[in-house]
Length: 202
Image (cartoon, rainbow, N blue to C red; front, side):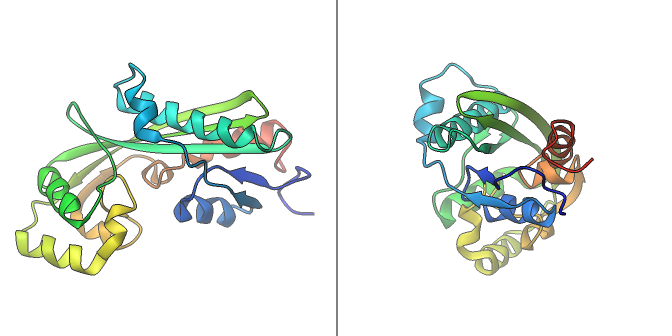
């Protein structure tokens, strides 16, 4: 008998390989079904402007979109936003965008806001938000070019143009906050909820 007690695997409403790997490493069987929602359009149609609220909104929309297709399954939506002062960053569209973004962030502190929402059918069962604060080194332009060349297209796969679990760690001098929130999935509270509800062994 494993740790997972639900009859069917968790459905992850995300294409994120990092989130999939986190859940798999925690012994949670899962199926990934990307939501494919219009994230920018959804944000533009709302009055929500705070980064944590945006992350929560998108996590909710992803969870509900997939839960409508799998009405009897547990569906997890997740999202992450990056806040630098009053500015909220999106994933850079290309290497040039990543370069401009990293130049703006270097030598300064920004915040990552991660949110998750667990849904079943049309009901929201659980939601959680977490914040981490990261300070970049004041790296040189030549280092930045070396980083971009080494990381390649991976810089467009995350909101910060980096992955701290790989080459992105070289950008930082200080990181404060929950490790899993930095990776875009506040895991510990989720596990606690799943245990409490009988989906995980307690």
